[in-house]
Image 1 (cartoon, rainbow over the protein chains, first blue to last red):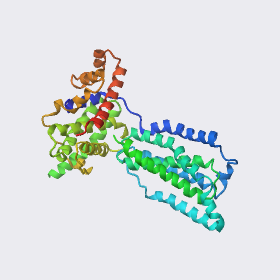
Image 2: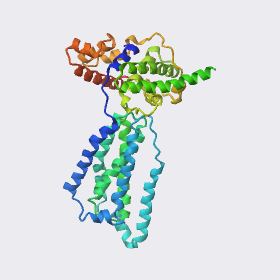
Image 3: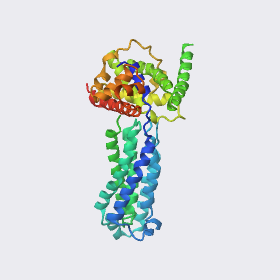
Image 4: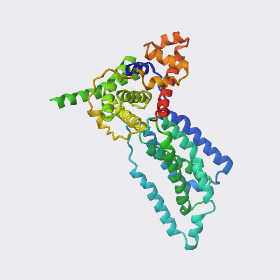
Length: 209
Length: 191
């Protein structure tokens, strides 16, 4: 078929595809509901919830990943456009805040208590739950990015993973009762990094076109 | 002097392409055809410049692949951004990818597209190239439909009549077939 002929075929195809943003709108909410319902019905919420949400030393374990998700999701979505460039350097603020929290907790925790706080009792459940609860959101983000024209698949995948990791972690924090930053900064942080790497890895495969 | 003309042409290109694509999004098929026809020679010269050693037909296949990608990703263009850089970004990605599949790694700065003057359309050599092969992988009806529109120049309505399908069904099948063709190229070209 000549190029001219191909053009006349393309010319006749007027059906528009949905934009990545619309697709995300369709999938992200159900994905988050799925994770939230799982935590509510299987794990159980922590009571009283105010303890997590209102206590200054504990609240970051919910709000920090939430803010991460809110800020990084639009960056990931933007990478669905081929001309998009995003600056990611400022994201180091999150590990920096984490490090500050760790330092604060280290200094204010008595000597004998530090190791116990750091290890907590639920490292494994945490490290399994955070990626698991993040996966539906990661799926939603990747599905929407696939509708776009990603020219930096690894970066887009990593940012999608980072955003989804934030979402999954914030949801998990509503259940988890490990309240020392020594625990949650370390293990939540590790969980989020895992989801980010998984996102980058899957991204390089599924975001090709 | 020549440089100036070149600059003026590039400037026009940016403005024209955006205008054409905007009209196309508003449903103007003719404008869309003009847009694709304007993009093609630019693609062709970039591919030829980079594709030393590739046969004429292979080059044209890459051009077609890029055109198909631009078409299928056109919803990622925002009307408030210039169409040319968007177009180059898609084409660059696709051309690099197409060369990789044919066993070559190329470095292709996006500026190449902007600076390239359109190549005169030589006799189009791809009468019987890849896309023809891929058509045989579609279901027979879909292949028939694409041929009717592409080779016989039929409209959607005429194709519907010929194949005894509703216009809506023709549209959907055409759209799916194009996606399928793009996916087939992705999978089947391994040289």
